[in-house]
Image (cartoon, rainbow, N blue to C red; front, side):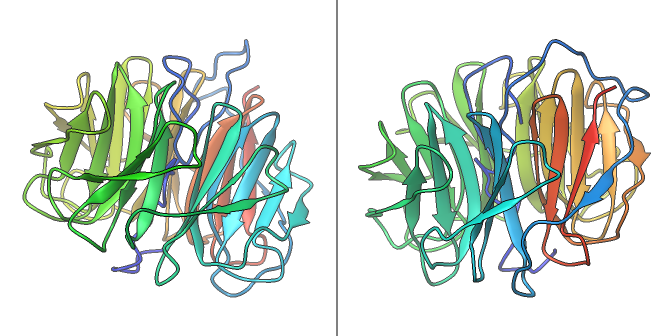
Length: 330
C-alpha cells in the first residue's frame, strides 16, 4: 500500500498494531500470548481467508482483544469485520467513516479515522461502536495503551498530532515532538514510542503521553510501524537501505537488513516471533529482530495490517481476491 499521503502502518494501535507479553500496550497488532512459543520453522504457512467483500480500498488495520480479531475498513457496507480465528469473518456496521487504524486495551477497542473524517470510535466488543469527540482535526493513524492511558498519533493536521485519553472516551490534544507524519505508536519498557515516515527526528518517546521527545532514527526512511516484544522495539520501513531498526530503549536505534527490499508497512510480535507484512505482497519473520527470513504469502496483496492472538498471526489487505491470511504457530 504505499500511498504516500495515506501511509499506513496503519495505525496502529497502531496499528497499528503486536501481542505484548512484556507490557499491556496495544497497536495495530495487539493480542494475547498462548503457552506455545513460536519459532521461524514452527510458524505454519500463511493461508488465505476472506473477510466480507468490501470496497476497492479494502481492509486497513487489524487488532486482537477479548478473544477476537477485529479489522477496520474505509468502505461500506460493513466497515468492521471480526473473527475468533482469522478464518471465518462476520461484518458489523460500525460508524460510516474512513477508518484507517485500530487497537485494543483495557477491554476497549479504539478505531481511528483517516483522511477528511478525522474521528475516533470505541467499542467494548468490536461489534457495537460509539463515536467520540476528537480534540483536534488530526489525521490519527495509531494508538497504544500503557495500562492507564491511551495515546494516539497523527500523520497530519494540526501542530499537536498526539491525543491522549484515560478511558478512550475523553481525549486531550498533546504536542508531538515534531509536526511530521507519525505512523505508528506502541507502549513498552515504561514508555510510548512512535515512528514517522518523514521529518528530522523520525522517532519520539514519552513516559507519560504528555511530553514527547524526538530522537534520530537509524536511517531517514519512511518508518511505518513499530512493535514491542521480548524487551525490544522493532520498526519497519517502506524505503531506505536498511528497512528494519531495533532499540532496547526506544531512543537509540540500530539499522538491520530486512529479508527483502519491500514496502514494509506493518509489524507485530507474538510468542517469540516478529512478523512483518508489506504493501507490495511480502511477509518476513524474525526471532530476534536482527535476522529476517521471507515468508511465502498466498496472494501478493497490499497487506496493510497484522495482529497476533490465540496462537495465530492474521493479516488484512486492501487488495486481492482474498483480503486476509493467517499463519498458526505449530
